[in-house]
Amino acid sequence: MSLRLHAELGSPMGEALVAQRLAELAVGRGDAQTADAYLRRGLQRLDQSSMPLHLVGRLYGTLALNALEQGDVAGATAAIEAAARASERYGNCPTCGALLHPVAAQTFAALGDPERGEPHAQAATQVAGYWESQAWRAMAELARGALARARQEPARAHQHFLDAAAAFELAEQPYEAARALLQAGLCRADSDPPRARAMLAQAETVFHRLGAARAEARARHEIARL
Image (cartoon, rainbow, N blue to C red; front, side):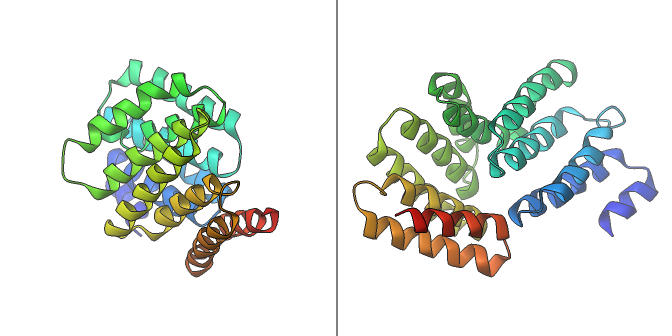
């Protein structure tokens, strides 16, 4: 309803922001196609928006997250590179990159290139320091955890992911908390399989409760591998 209302009122900015939030919800549910459709709609409003710089980080960050959640690291990389080009054209809002930078750090970590992800992790940490926000702190911890794992530092990565999960819980974001907990469990898979299995099972339970089918299937797959 909100999306239709902004469209009827001729508010491209509002329409794009609502589309991004709906896309983020679809990503959490594992509905990549629906997320992609909302993101395309939001990106089509960039040129029409009065303040496109506030949309770039949100839209492209969600686009990268959608790809990353599907295991499409190349797609996530393309989204981040597109965000850099869009920032050159429209400008950049540091706080609106609160999602983009952590996802970028995770993407480059998945590519095995933590040095390329380091500036994004630093940006995520800087944004988290602007206000007292548990969610932004959690996203910065996710970025640090991903880079630590890429640097073959599983103990440090494990702690960052646990800190991220705890902060997401305080921010009342159960999907993100479970996602961080899953990553923490994977970091303990070699050193402490029973503990890792318990964390993965806990994440799986949350994903199931939220209807996040793709994430639930991944957690179940990782449990079976232990």
